[in-house]
Image (cartoon, rainbow, N blue to C red):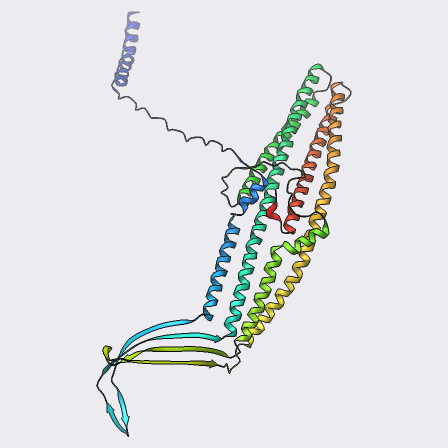
Length: 454
């Protein structure tokens, strides 16, 4: 027994010694440095959407990039006109110089060489085109192009307003569909609660609860998709207004028959008359046609004689203080002898013929746009009336199916089908309202009244 105790003591002693050494090492070991936590990035605060009405969107579209580019094009056309006008304005040049030369003169076949000498010369030269058909017609063409550019500026305003209006309607449609998705989810959750209560009471089978849960999942998925469409439509509207995509926009106007109203008449005859009097494309085409006619006259003018007047005066001499006044005045007639500009006139004729065809086609295109917009407007309003009736019947069907399911007279499958029918009816109503709003915007654009949208 004593020997066993001694063996155990001999076995345990080294372990205790190792534990003591380990404890001492832990006490003598330097403390582990504490790592400071890395601060997390601040969570961005969601920006409140900027709610805009359609009239405000139309006003903001006037500052978009295409409109600004059109204004710069007008400034360039004005500068081109001023440049062409300089050909008809007087020219005044001042020259001064000194020349040192050795003069060689032959007198009766006897060469005479004079030592180098200086010649001082300073004078003014005045010139004026008296008859220049080429320059006159180029000025006329530049003036017509300026008028066409100003009309194109109004065209850019119309395009910007129409494009922003359609983007606004798309955003309003997405918001309306999102509201439909929210109502659909709320109705599906109500159906799920009602189904669970019926299952607990034993009034319906358990598969009814699975159907209701599946319907809630589908409605929640559709809601998420609708939220994404709203964000995409907001980005598209910001892009149409040349705003940064980070701007969060929302439509303050709801889809309805009044959205997209303007000063455009709703009758075909009045709309066609307004279109032919207010479309800036027609003015652009008319001024471009006149400019090309002036280009043809200018090309023909290059083959006509030109008359210029000039006057030149100054002082010349071998010493600065011993100069003499010299001057000359006259008229110069230039007659082209080689007909090298007939090809320019031929090119101008072809361009003029092309523009005439475009002008004729533009009138027919405008008539078609007006008629299409009126047909879409009438169709959309008729579809809207039918969708209102369809939604009313769908709501009644949901109510009747809920009553039958609550009374135990039927399963929830009929109620789910009725709910889906109500959602489809609401979506069709949104689509019909969008069709009416887009038709009104396109009618305003067709008659040249898009800037009056509200």
